Length: 397
Image: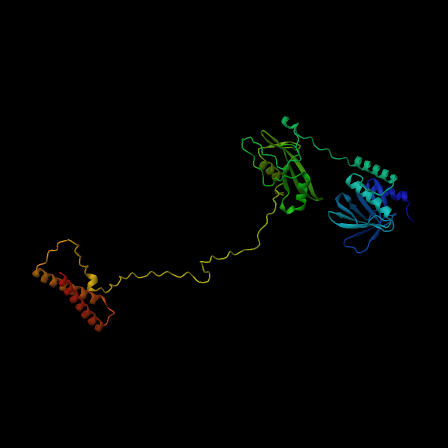
């Protein structure tokens, strides 16, 4: 005999100890399964308990919806088609199916309200159903009140009235540190907003997990980091206040450091160096281009060696007696010429003959390529020319 529904409800409330928000029949299928299986589901708190039927007092399976990362509607809201949701958790992915689209829209509203702590927009529900959602939201907020943020350390007086202009496109200028030198900006500093920094860390986890960025207050900074936890990655943001004596990391117990690099070093030490600064990846070249060789250089054959030319003394060109002897000086008009003595003329002729013979002898020694007949003919001709030129020169004298 089956148990009374009231008894079953009490037993379930005792086992789970969570408030019941919504329940009903549904179909469930994981990515490894081919067909949907029928269950009776109860949404208690942020956990979905699945039973084989509505008479079972012990759940068969439960889903922790706190790990829900996305909930997609695979079919539009129509009166004649079933509703299918795809739930993506940190550890698995599954599908929920409701044959009645109105019931599917209610499941969607309750799940998103409990997870996001707000009523989703564009719900196609009746006013009475919306009132029930508001009561569930108030009850869930009372059960899990938001954790109050710890009070921040007192801000410097010169920053109380400061406001940051969001239209500024340039990062805040570095302040003068305690040593009166300009503060060095770390390489992981990017002039982005909180949302942009979180998107960068989420899209490129291999580039690092810490980004230093401008704060919403003038001359101040913020630090965004992405940490991996057992339940999944978590984004955190910290404020860094710039003062005349250094930089204040605004934690439960404020920490004072001297530079932005020391701010980064402090977070690296506290996270046991499991995080590293965000460094944008740089492109690398994948091709090697060979530049063309100069026209004056040959790649295939080596440059020819330059052989020095032998320095040979030039050969003496054969000269005639007429070329060797300077031309006789012609007396100018009106100049008186003293006639030579006949004995002096005979002496000069003998000396001239001796000089001519010496010249001929030198010429014969230097000319190596001439034959003996050519040498004899050349000597006779030269002798005749010498005698004739001597006779002419004697006659002129």
